[in-house]
View: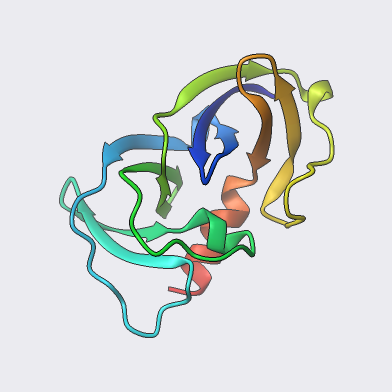
Length: 139
């Protein structure tokens, strides 16, 4: 698989292939969107573009968080782009495809599987394209 960017959300560690990473920023002001699904925190302005900010916990079927997270990790695939609110600054970790196992996290079509790292414990690997498609379909 190669390099992944890892980040913490609610005490769990997630990762995504680094080629999907568009940036890491502190979270600015968010404009709430009435009637949006619970996993959409709202829109923020990043470098002059409106960017949907998603709550990964809610996307994976857990309770949405009541407050915003301090950082955002922006994932991009062509015209599809969204930010995930994260608790911890991202790291880059190298993993081998053969090390990916079924995840013990909430089952979801948004997860590829997981790997165990000496430094990070279990890392749930996201499927960024599936995650971005969910964000766009429900916009």
